[in-house]
Amino acid sequence: MALVKKGSRLITVDGTTYRWRLRGRPTYDRGLVQSPLAYAVEHAETPGTTLVITTDQPHPSNWLGTHGSPVLPGQVAAGIRTALTAGWTPTSPGSPFHLDQPTQGRRLGL
Image (cartoon, rainbow, N blue to C red; front, side):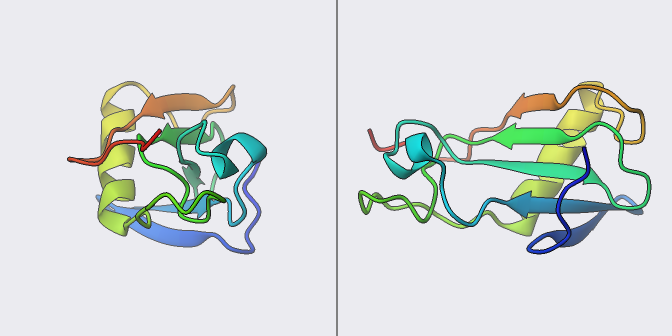
């Protein structure tokens, strides 16, 4: 399933363009800081398998006021490179590829 273009951003990693998107409003569990932040990535021109990257930080718009940092393009690029090394094939159809990508020094404040 392709990502919604509205609200998504383009990023070029090692000469390939990808589209990534962070859900603007948190899901119920993420709003209550019971689940960590996750965002999706796909190949921009030939979307196939979607990459779902889960971090160890809360959603920035959580309802409890727990500090959540924004997802930076450098983090997205690092996640894409890690997923490609782990076997993600972005242009092949298939189930979402899940990757746990903890951020450096930040923890989910439960």
